[in-house]
Length: 381
Image 1 (spheres, rainbow, N blue to C red):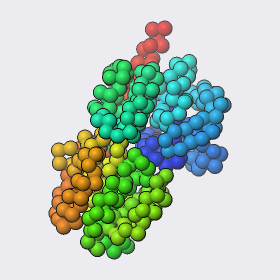
Image 2: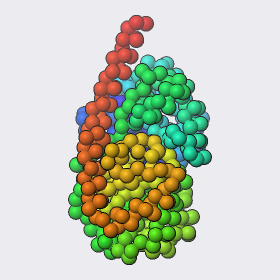
Image 3: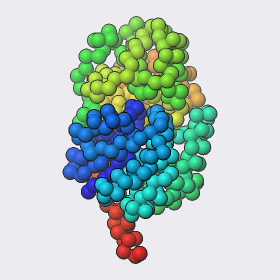
Image 4: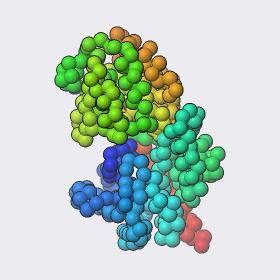
């Protein structure tokens, strides 16, 4: 089938990773994919090697939201009319176009599926999670007009139900990773960093990621010389965090790493992966670490607590990250057998539930179901 994918290729964030992984997997299975995204001409050139790409003009874009130019909707409509895809899949990027898509696709008689990535915390324990709840409320009326809305967990389903999105419109398809690529294996990273025990954070350095709670715990503990904390990523808080913690013993700032093989090597060498977020959807970074056989600690926000439940990892209270890490990190520093046990359980959880192939199987079936429903509806009218 031919899928018109509306998503993001930059700047780097979970949405970008999701779009890359899913579209590449669809191509591998023989589907045709046209990628429509907010991009400059240079970015479009980068895409033409593997996907048919259409760039949509924008006034501003960031990892959080995108402001399209006034001509973007017309270009989108004309492109969809010319492409004649079987289905449109929008990986929602917090853009005004998200609210126009149901009407656009209805006029073109195209089935419309969305993936709603927005992070959440059902307990509303901080300003960040309260802000995300407001965004859910704003989006819910539009989501109710999509043919299907893909979300990552039953908790998220319940949120949308309460906001008026019909259950028949909702599909729970968790994120997935390729366990062949993200797998345990040899790594030189510990030797490079002169580390006996390696703790890793990998993700954006942004307020909602709550990385400072981890750094505060590390500073309080004064971990042994052989313990290193690698911070992998960049973002709006990078300079501030480095100015406050940059010289602390054992902290290594590796910055943003675009090369996937290098990121995998870091994960393979890690003993513990820590994700202290205040809000999440379902973290691909967490799943990648689990798939590499790393012991994982993550907060009880979004679907991450669900992923780590029942012994697949350790679930932290988002309000008590620093104090809980002050207890847990020394245990992992002195008991390598604990890391090994949790690492095995983490990888098994991914193999059981969160593989990319399982995700694509569910997605293909959803596409077929939506297209069947569209055909039936067209015949009735």
